[in-house]
View 1 (cartoon, rainbow, N blue to C red):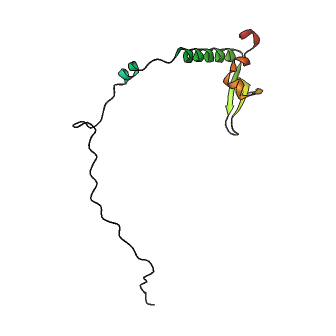
View 2 (view 1 turned 180 degrees about the vertical axis):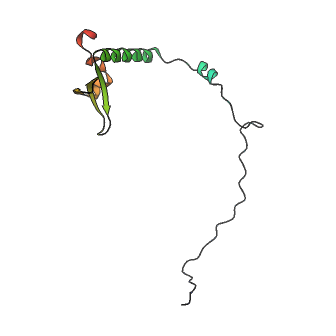
View 3 (view 1 turned 45 degrees about the horizontal axis):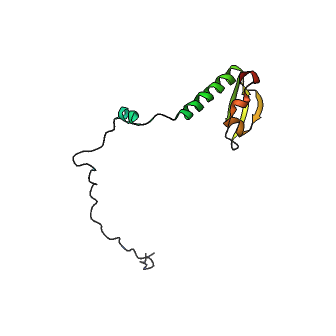
Length: 112
């Protein structure tokens, strides 16, 4: 058996590039910029009052549901399904996503 050379495929070498140079630092003489997180936190404005009020309302509804022995569970295996369950895991009823976004309607009438 004699191997034969074939001219079917030619390899074209890529042009030779000069070696890459490291990027120049953004600020001469400094390797990395350091951020003072405490100063950044002070510089930023606090959340708007309506956002804080919405968080307070959500916490109130959570406490009321918890006191009634209920919890909202989300199931993501088949899209987004929401359920109202008791603390022992028993299904009370399925929930619409509207009820999840505004859960105050889930509270007993005397809790509102």
